[in-house]
Length: 282
Ligand SMILES: [Zn+2]
Ligand SMILES: [Zn+2]
Image 1 (cartoon, protein in one colour):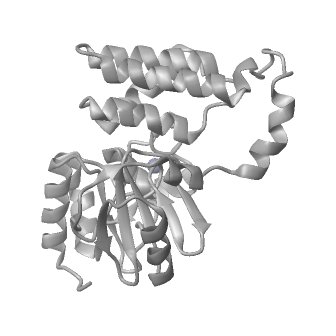
Image 2 (cartoon, rainbow, N blue to C red):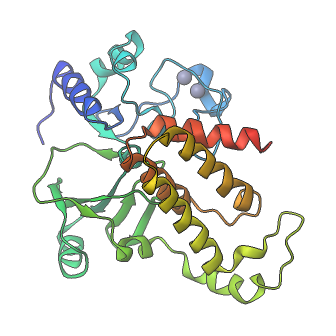
């Protein structure tokens, strides 16, 4: 893909941001820019994200994927302006727009996807393709040879809108992120663990699954006061499962995705999540 001049990159970034895609610039090496001095080693506390409250309000393009934003004021700010001048590529945080990118690195991976995964929107990459599904999940690199899942807490290069109709994130893709051995080993012990001291009686997967499904449904069926419903639902899920270690990124991503289909911004989801954690003293 030919490199674009900075002004074109920034214009493209603003256009994508206006469509709800949180974007960030990448260097010539196709990597996010490094942290500024104040943010080195996360001394600043890091950006707020779905797992950590974070205290960083750095105006620079720090903290990789977490810098991605839809805010035109940030995208045109002086520090970001400087970054666009040096940038060679554009990237986005897929989960921030309620999306998952299955990054297929080479022809064999593409062939596997065509034989295994439901068709969806596809974007050609240097040697492979990005398959983009509607719905967010946990990001995992190397789920098989040449296949990465990029969604929460990750970035994917923007290489154009692609072709094909975007379809809902299928279970077969969600299943790729499941770490089987650990789950199997822990399984038989889980049901006997009492609900105290950070342990959880609902570690039986079916209870947690039902809880998350109900939470998704509650958000999806809300007809009004979606802000309040989102917050109350996050609060309920966190108070039930927030301390026991049951909640995975994939669960959180599902709740965020449900709220985003109701028009909530990724930023409000993060705020609501952090506010709920704070309310519970977490
Ligand atoms: Zn910084
Ligand atoms: Zn920082």
